[in-house]
Length: 445
Image (cartoon, rainbow, N blue to C red):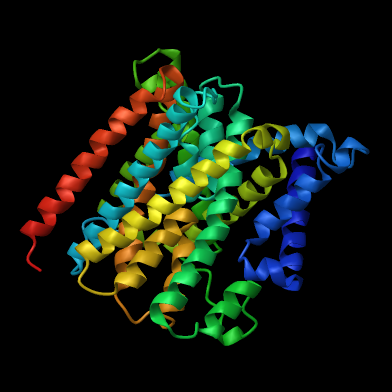
């Protein structure tokens, strides 16, 4: 228990150091690198691959525990996704929302296919054998961000893969590449396409990473509970962790009785399904008022920050460096095709705001949701266009299904080889493309 407190305190210090460094170092601001990544980098420097080679500053037992943190925290992070979703509410911008979700789904399938196809190329053309599941990291890193490294690591760990630490490190490395290059390329596209100066107010806020003006500071969320009963934050935490714990119990029963298929499902996938049904029951019972999505978002945001610090601080440098050629090759191919697909499909399926829509989806597909929001706010500082609504709703659909598909692809590649996920992904790419064509022809423009 003391180690738990010590490790959380250590990660907290790294996060604070990351915040301070970002506020002081201009290069880190210009690259829009999150404080959690910076703090994780400091932890990596203090770890066994750098200073730890000469003097053990951080106990090795801590490092071994920290490696598992992203895989542990990813469970409540993903389990919470269905909680607070608006069920059955109609959106008058249905067409644009469906197209946004369709493009993001298509990018997800294509990025996963690219990753596994590169595994195939290295194996057959370069005669370089990569680990069996190499391929899922591109989409996990680019579209999922640093926090989703835990999905890759935990899934492989549950499957008994002894290279789960390496795969987690590769994902974190790709996520850093995608985040930085995505923002830099996005800003370049805005300058080139619009021909106007960027909104300095928006840029300065995102660069510094804080808001000094109290009048502009947003509220964390609503108090849905009175403290005479329970603290609102504690209630939301209890729901998220309670469902996560219930999913663990159910999965253990599946494994105990060796139920086919269900005993092989990942814990967070099962937790997401359980949470979805629990949220449906809560909504039908009129209890949706008790959940505030902002409060839930802050909980998952907090867990994600600590997951990122832990993931970056424990990157297995030797293993990752041995994969530097596949990582760079995958990054270049994935980055180029992602932009090309999003930009061309935005022109094809949207009547207006092509650049804004393209950059919002591109930012999400190379970084995280907030990256897409940053690029959108630079184009649309006051968020006066309908792009944010379409983008947010379309993203929520892929956020629910994306991690499940990643885990499925990893399981197939480990159990068989890269041809199995590639085959499924080709089918999904074709079906999604045909569905979007059919839908847009059938919807009145």
